Length: 185
Image (cartoon, rainbow, N blue to C red; front, side):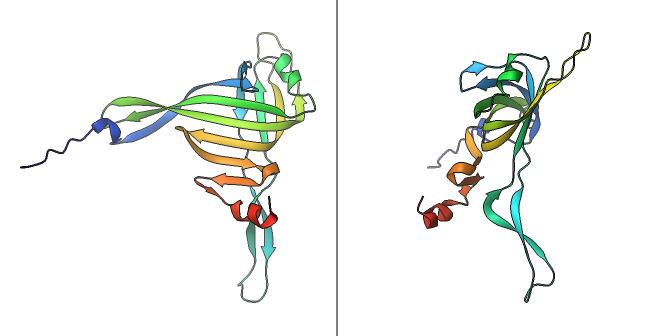
């Protein structure tokens, strides 16, 4: 007796094209929706130490395990509003950006929406109130120094950097686990 094997084509992306970002919403403190804004995510640079000497043919700028340099997030607003001035207050601010990526499966001819979530905590580094010009955007901007960043794509945590709690989780691995253990924290 032959066993029938059934394939569910919806489970397998034949030729998935990661098309574009559909849209997103901005929340403050997990609840309050803020005005329309564009987010510039931080660049992640690891702290390095130059190694030179016997046994090395030159210099190596060696990354320090789990140590991340300053991270900045920029938020550009369409109008000068209370959200701009609120984020200038000298305290930590928790922001969540919830978005949707569009993917197209060229083999099946179907679209798929993939959720994207960015959580960040930061303190104000600068605030640019922008300009006042007839029939135009103010281009007001806040820059936050981040102590926490978490990126979740498709419901899976991909990045979590928590500088104050020794967490540097990148794509399934927290490289500071052994460091926390060695420090007794």
